[in-house]
Image: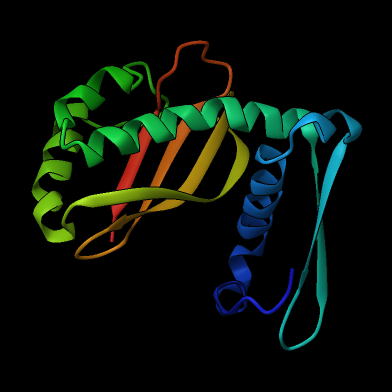
Length: 170
């Protein structure tokens, strides 16, 4: 991938953008999906230089399955059903926060951003936090007043469809 002003402006986030490119490619594969074991992304910077990233198809499949959690939460924000987000939050989270306060802050921020139009995934990171495999899905929610950053963290070992943390800010 080359000639992306967005990627060139944020070189420290290249790995996040590369994962987003790999995910977008993978989720659009049909029958040919079984022909791949890895997806390789090469980012070419405007100032020169090239970085390569490789993603296992098994990892991308897991991300695709867990992406539904982020999409469900974004749909509830779009429908302004903020209280319905609570059951999608993991009470035994390894992140320390008050779920009621989080929902209240989303409700307060909503008029500032305007009506949510769509969720756009940008990329993901997988890391280990307090003994948990954490999937951080980063994206944006396009809104009619102001597009804002939106991310969801998910315990990859949790079999329930819930998030450990939501970050919703401009």
